[in-house]
Image (tube, rainbow over all chains, first blue to last red; front, side, top):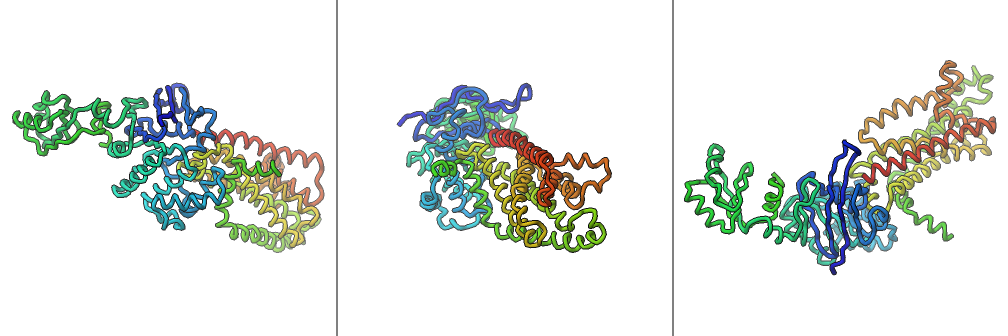
Length: 312
Length: 263
């Protein structure tokens, strides 16, 4: 079960030529194994989408090697794409066709017979909870439904790998949870998932392994638990101060925790025991407006790796 | 049979299938337009304006005005449709949410997408040309024996315009640029390529300009064939010019589609 489906070595993407060239992906190595959910995390502009487009074989590799499903992406593009399912960031649903027609006509691109497509489209619309919408115009769908339709469409060729670029960006919490639940089901069914996201909770929910990208490079790789153990402490104490005393209070807190990060609105103290650190803070006469103790998460890993917060 | 069946499995046919699938929604309207368009033009220009011209200048044209303008009208109408079908829809399809992007994620290569769409333009042009010449035969504006030759000529003109238009449109992001070209290139061609009057009516210094325009070659080719005055050298020049445009356009379009869809 540990067959490697995607293997990149020194993968590089440069847009433009010569001195005007822009390096979006700067020599990354990664491996995705059969059946796992693999995440690519990073802020906007970190090189996630460029990486995904190269894996989707719609963007030529500038340097390095990329093998997908045992074929070289440079020469086997069509064969590879035949076995991939793609959920792009900009959904390419056809507004002039109905929900079901979108699945049928997309399936035709894979050379599948109409009979097979009719049967599969019914099944996939049920799977993505769009069964009662099959003859509806695409324009009547909500954002979450459109995204689920894109996922149903990506599954029409029964792909071995599904690529999802920012699958829940712009969706409300309820729509996100339904989508996660469907993606989790896909994973249970043995489909390999590769997804990019800048939501840490999404990565924690779905990914077995992930890489953190920053400025075109891989800053760290591992399972969510490994990354948290390696790059951050067990707990975090978050403090908020009134604007006028923020600097003084921040200075007073130095040295009280393993690591202290200053964010625009918060002070983060990384420690293995939040209660103990809060007591020490209080003992120094620091009186925050609000104090919160929580477990460390991927957000903290990202902060520690890049010195920046992902979303603010 | 086997090779035919295999050819129909070629990826480009899947893109053609997409455009035909969409066409199912608009085909009735488009056929009405294809028939109404020549009817209106032939009535207004052929009978209305034609009477006036025939009375005063019949010795100049040698043939009734309706017979003179019909091939020009056909070729100009086909050019206009070809440009419209290969500009706006191509730009839309190449946008981030467009059909080309969806198709590019499947086994289709950018050139398959181009060839599939190209076959659709060819089918639409053939359909228009057949309906147009059919109406013209009923009008008595063209000999029923020569009319069938007008269909492949119209098809050649359509491709000579559609392919370069697509090669350019796939690189365009602003719709205003397409309408500017339509207004300042396509419409003037329509008016000054000998469609409505012989270009000899223009000042002599403008003749070389008219000879250089692709539409004039299409109009003159269609007209000389329809009137039975075609000469082998003239016909060869026209066909070479129009085919050359289509072939150069094809090279540019293949490159343009690859660059636009596999970034």
